[in-house]
Image (tube, rainbow, N blue to C red; front, side, top):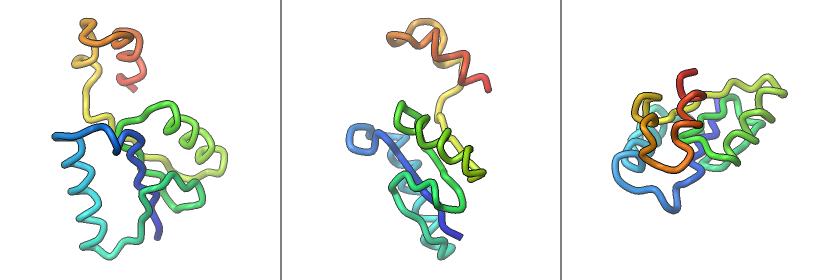
Length: 97
C-alpha cells in the first residue's frame, strides 16, 4: 500500500496542524507504510491535510480514477462561522460535509 500524504500549506502553516501532520507521518513510518508527501493520484489512497485549491484539484482527479480520498480539515464548520476570516462564512458550508 502506498499513501499520498499531502499537506498543501506545509511551507507556511505551523503549530498544531503542522504537528498533527508530523505525527501522522511518524505513525505511517512506524507501521512501515510507504508514503509520499506529494499529491500522487496513482497512490492507493490520497490523504489531504487542510484542503486548498490544489488539494481540491487532486481530490477530484483521484476520484475520477476511483482512488479513495481522505481529507482532514482540522476545524469544524462552527469554528469557521462568524466571519473570523475573509470568506469563512462562505467556506463553512462545505466543512459541514
